[in-house]
Length: 190
Image 1 (cartoon, rainbow, N blue to C red):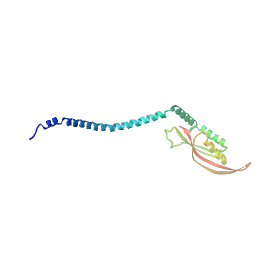
Image 2 (cartoon, helix red, strand yellow):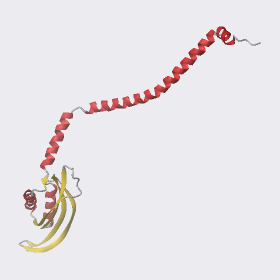
Image 3 (spheres, one colour):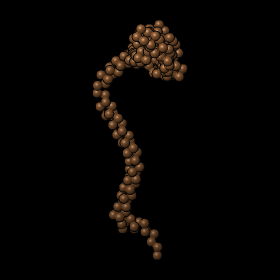
């Protein structure tokens, strides 16, 4: 015997079990939907935490920003005072003659090599090359190099060579003279 009312009887016989199954099914569906959105929310939370830490660090480091900016501007102005102008030949010669006078050497060659071609065209500061040959005693050559190092302009030494020139008879006796050939670059304004 077959009972055609089986589904209907089943619903009537177990209403609590069917209600619990329906609630479990709804809760399982809600759980899986929620898990799918939680991974996206966790990524968003990590991103927001990272941005928050960056903002907090920026706010903490912003203290005294005006003083730092003023010190930086002052440093840049001091740097720009030490720059040469590559096209100012008279000013450059005056600088080198001042070094010659301060150290007591004799400058035999002063050859400007111009702005380096390797320098970026968009750079604010460019190196200007020079080839200088000076003659004098060893202590005078050392004094010339010291004057160049502590001088007004910023420089980069490329290469140099020292050779004996001659022995000169003087009132104190025979003095040894050396020749210093030096290639270097001075920082220049564009």
